[in-house]
Length: 356
Image 1: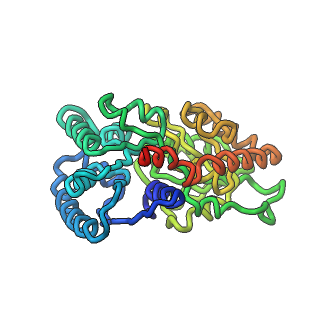
Image 2: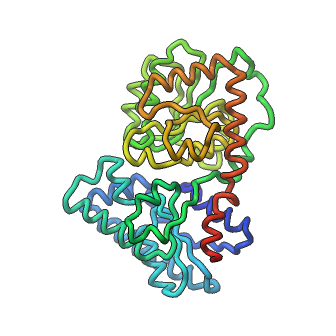
Image 3: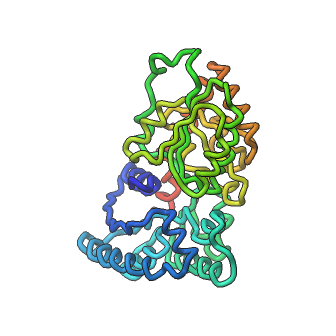
């Protein structure tokens, strides 16, 4: 749950609805980027196979120790684990959180290539979907993107924000953050093409002399391109990563949390966890103007066209210069997620499906 907050949101939400949730976890020891790289490099599959076999043994032992479950929820990136769940519990309802498709993610990160590799990734997705009774996705666009034969088993559960992000929101403006203080902006992520981090970097490069300070947290595929684009711009602190327990407080200490700005097909279909989490922590949200994000957040975000660094720089400048608008944007963002995107609220569609 520390690495993947989505799993924690589902667990917290189901518990809030009165369900007894037992966790069975055997860490694979590979982060998301490593898993995607293995899927795109078939010669590394033996490494994955060995780790997977070891984890499956521990999962099988752990799963059999407790009482028989009424339903099993397999967290995202569980393309292989859902097969084990089906083998162990043939008559139990299996829920797969299909937040990330193997083929879709590899294409977004320019790793899939084509031919046999693409067919392998498609087959991995297809087998996982076939093993599940209920398929959880995060947006209507991702539901429509499921193969037609699986769509009727799909249910939309927004990503939402864990409770610790709401708890991190400041009760009032912090001392010393008056009209003359610079606008503090945060971004955190894995620097994938979906996130459009080089667009952020280009925008920062345009903000030389502006009353804006930025904290960029994370590392990944497009980090170097982002840093190069930001050179000569506003003061920026680069942090490789922050422990998940400390991240809510760090983001809450900023005025603005940045969302995503990519232009690829997947970027236009998602509402990223960072916009929910940043809003829960009391930040104003600046993100790309896409249908799913506007539908989810309404007036709770400041929108700019995907891929438009100039528009992003202009939006940050306006917030830096108009503190009344900044305060209003922070309130709109927090209000938008408080009512609809806490753990209990987001899992309601899944609870209805499980209880039907």
